[in-house]
Image 1 (cartoon, rainbow, N blue to C red):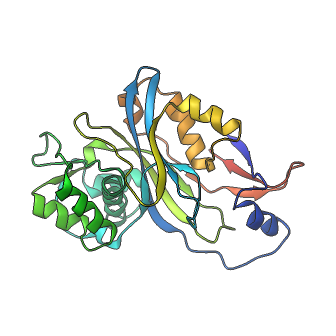
Image 2: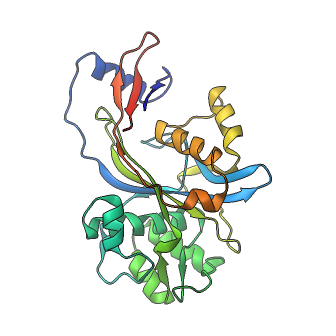
Length: 276
């Protein structure tokens, strides 16, 4: 599959993309490891996904609609992380990387979804009910995770909880284009929204959070009233086409690395992706 994504003149990425196309070069930024999570649920109009709109002052992807997620904390790879479900060795096979790196991607997914929307994929027993991360005490824990005063391992140890890797499905793998000053090597995961928890989007990085009907968001995007980067756009389309939330969360069998490149078109610079 080959696909083009036009870069509107008003987008922050359009300027660097145009200069790159014109032959200007600078030292490529090393991609930072990152994880993002598509929280999904079944709604009256099909599968819904929880999304945030990043504040306009963000250095990366300002005003963009995104899924909860962020950069890996090196401590996400700490040995002895309380864990239930497929282990880092199995995730390493799925992600095609070393076990410590696989653990970091999975742990970052669980940590980021807790930090950014108050959803915790952890339980006291391997098959037990998920924890209830509500109330002022958990709000303080989230703040200390964001400030890096606490690591995910410390939180799980203190609360006697196990990270539930069995609740995550791997869906996509994207790397930010070479011309971007901030680059990320991002794995996209999916998880069912726990029925007794509440996704609140209470993060300083977002000015809006909501459960989204994919087709409605895609229509807003087509009309220019919503902004999404190509990875988010493609994933929202996949959520739209899902038969149900549980079906969507299942691992995608073939997950190629997608590295968009900037190409010229009659309408201006565009990002092209090739998926084999």
